[in-house]
Length: 100
Figure 1 (cartoon, rainbow, N blue to C red):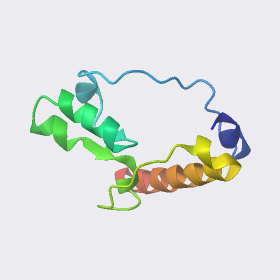
Figure 2 (figure 1 turned 180 degrees about the vertical axis):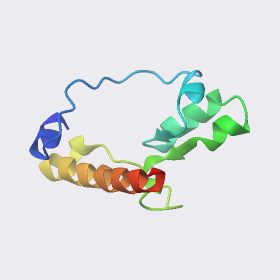
Figure 3 (figure 1 turned 180 degrees about the horizontal axis):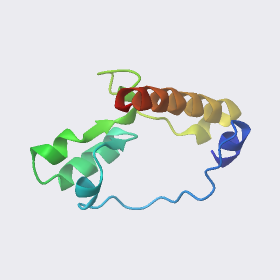
Figure 4 (figure 1 turned 135 degrees about the vertical axis):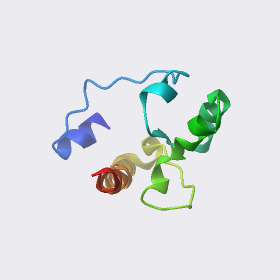
């Protein structure tokens, strides 16, 4: 994905993954999961309805109520990475439009 991002003039080389923690509910207004397994794991950590209401599958931004997951691009070759980039880019653009 780093190479695909570079092709689209984005540098994501400094990004790092980490485990979600309960304090994230206090630090973030929106919590997005890329698939149902991650969404379920995050929901288990929710302390109350306010926490639960922050959690959403990311692609529901661009495809409301479809509950689509972000596929693993690795298995789709070059086109898989491009397809995932386009999915995420569309959802990001729509999300930014909703919070402006």
